[in-house]
Structure formats: C-alpha cells, structure tokens
Image (tube, rainbow, N blue to C red):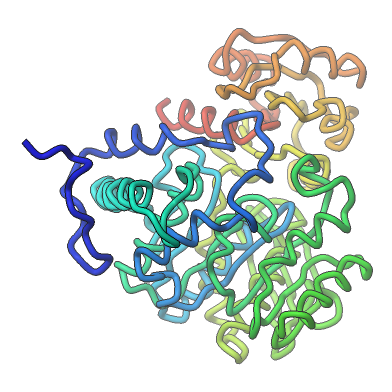
Length: 465
C-alpha cells in the first residue's frame, strides 16, 4: 500500500487535491503555529527576511497573487473598515473583488471573501487540502525551493486566500495586513495601491516601541509603481513613508488633508453624513451607515484608494451606492435594541478613544452605559477605560475572553477600580451579557469591547438568541 507521503506532487496548474471535510482541513491548519493565539514574538515569522516560507509556497503554486492587481491595506486602526469600503467601491464599478481580512469574529471563512461572500466550506476545505499536499512535498524535497520549516497558520491561510482569488479569476483583490507590513505574510503581493490608515502604538514588542519604528514597518508594503495613500497626518511619520516610496520607486504619494480629506462629518440617523475631497473630485452629502466620526477618515482614505486604483474619479452615485451597503461587523456594530447592544473590538488606546468619542456623539442619548469587557494579556484595561472615558460608564462587567492569551476577569475589575468605575466579575461571557442587559434598562446601552475574541463570541451568542 502506498503511504500518503509517497504520493507524487501535483503541479500547480492541476486539479485540486481530493475533497475532504472542512473540519479535517481546519484541524490540519490548527496543527501549525498560530501566532494570533499564542504569547509569541511575532517577529519570528519567517526566514532571513520574514517572508521565505510564504514566498516558497506561492512560487510552488505559480505565484497566483500576480494574476490580479492588489490594494494592500495596513495601519494600526481602521484597516478592516477601510478594506471593506474599498471593496464596495471597486464592486460598485463592476469588478469581481477578492477580500482578505483578519481576524475573524465567528468563522475563519469570513477572512476570505469574493464578491462580499465568505468562501464556501467545500472551497476552503479544497484549497487547504491542496496546501497540505504542497507543504508535505516542499518539506520533503531538497534544493533551493524546499521549506526549511513548516509555515505558520497565518502564512498558510494567506496562501490559501491568494490562491483562491486566482482560481475565482477576481478582477482585483483587497488584502489587509495581519501585523505591521514589511514581514507580514501578505507582503508577497505587489501593491498597485498601498494604503496606510494611521500609525499608533500597538504590537510594540514586534514592531518597536515608537511610532516611527511602527511607521517604517508598515511602509514596507510600498512597492515599485505603487500609488501610496496615507491617512496618517503626522509629518514625520508621513516622511518615513515618502522615503520608502522614493527608495523603491513608488509612482505617487497621496496625503490626507493635502491631497484628499473628509471635509464635513456630521451625525446622521444610523450613521454619518460626509463630504469628501480627493485629487480628482468632490463628493457631498454622502450617507455612510457606520457609527463613529473616525469612519469619515476611513471613508476618505477608501475613496482616494479607489480613485488611485482606477486612475480617475468615481461618479458620485457610484460612491453613494457603495457606501449604502457598508457594514463592518464588530466595529461599533449595533446588534440589539431595547436595550441597545453595541459590539466594538477596540483593544488599544487609539481604538478605545474612538469608541469613547462615539459614546459621546452617536450614542449620547443613552441613559446608562454598561461595559462588558474582556482583554488579552499584554493589554492594560485601565488604559483602555481611561481612553473610553470612565465618567461615561455606570458599570463594567468583566469576563475572561475565550483565548489562551486571556487576561483574567479579576484584572479588569481591579483596573476599573483604579479608574473609579464600579465593576463586577462574571463567570462567563454569557453571564456577563445577561448581567449587563438586566442592569442597564431598556433605555440604556450595553457595549461589548476589549478584545475581538470577546466581540466575536458575543456576536455568536446574540445571533443565536
């Protein structure tokens, strides 16, 4: 009987590997190092330049990521929202668009979408089965094309997404960076448009302890010929990106407030009313059904990126049509009424400050605000509460996130005490949600935040109800 390891390698253009269940495929994927779920130094992501393994995977598949143009999106906050808006704008122009985002909230399928629809279970199982076979071959063979070590979970899923987009013959792909940029697995793409939303202190153990070091890492997605769209406005940080562009031969650099801007941003029922300006056009009175004033800046970046991609302005009705479809799960997402329940994955001080601003603006009518909060190790819940605004909070219900990196709920209670906010500890997220809803009253507001692990689990619980 032939051993599975002795099966011949299938060439990159051949049919996919035999079908298997998604459960089996994900079990194989989960046997790889998943740096999102571990206390690990994410800088140890590859070989000499951090991209060796994923490059070899892509080369063995015939570099499918080179068969379509890419908008590559990085930034500390807002990159998920901006990626979704860019996708909608490209689709409104008639393109078939693949979108790769991270992390997911409820299902890994969410990370890989074509035409806005998550990859089907059988398709994800098939592409992962192909990668399992390819990995086995590359680990066994010798020579320059071999893998010296097994790829990580994120490297494999990135390769799966980029291969799937080629198989689906997408017109374009919007690819969100996982962490940083320079040595992130997604940086095997060559960006036609490179987007940097902003630069704040986050993942400092990986990217460095200064905004300048983080900007240099994120600027690594800029390639020769890229049009670079920069939402960050600090001139010193923008210059770091500009220098990267000059070094590699980027085509152009578009700067927020100079080349494009959100010139009006008003609260509207269910979202924001925006005026935007880009190098090629002005767009007035756009309704964006997303909460938070910061979404105006994300919208300006997205429209500028789409204009850079097409090389011309978009018709105002195209932008209005795209924005009307905008949803961003887990980012100031309203999932229930009476009381209003909002999910927001803010997990760093800048994100928490945006949440606090939204509480003061979009949700100012709430009579009582109760926070359901769970954080991961390495986060300071007192810092997050301080950014949200302790004076806005009647109660914090602390829970432990469903993650091996979870910070105990007791630490959140202790941090709330230091911020002079009443807090209680719940045995589980389900109990925390029930306590928060019961304590807030029908005219109050429950906000679930602190970690996307908590937000994703809460979303699943509330949807089942």
